Amino acid sequence: MNTFYRLTTSSTLLLLLSSPAVMHAQYAPQQSPPPGYGEHGGWDNAPSEFNDAQRRGFQDGMVGARKDYENHRQPNVNNRDEYRHPNVPHELRHDYREGFQRGYDVGVRHMMEGGPDRR
Image 1 (cartoon, rainbow, N blue to C red):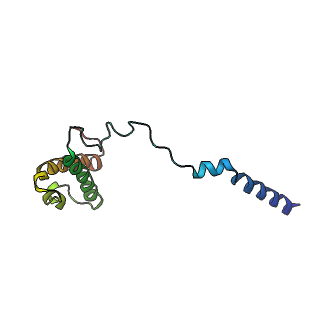
Image 2: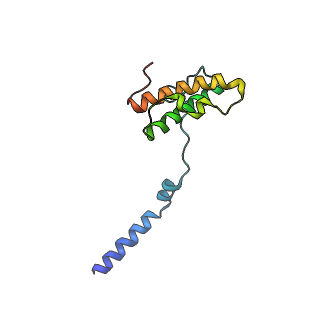
């Protein structure tokens, strides 16, 4: 009787887990976020007035700050090769560095001081 009960329970469980509803919930494509999601106000978003070079620099600065934090280095934007020798066309270096420094500062404040940008 005990073996029959286990076999019946296992069969029922297998049947339920392989039902179309469970399979759909498990393998359904993910829905995209609603329009406007993540476009405004995140501490890690570049300011809207930034141009493309500044936005790229901002994101790279955030990555640099995270690397310094993870490697327990003192925060200093001048120690980042990406800041000193950016891999962008010469005419975009000023904008890139401006964005990099701002992103680095925001990242450092967020990760090392545990809070949002306080500017």
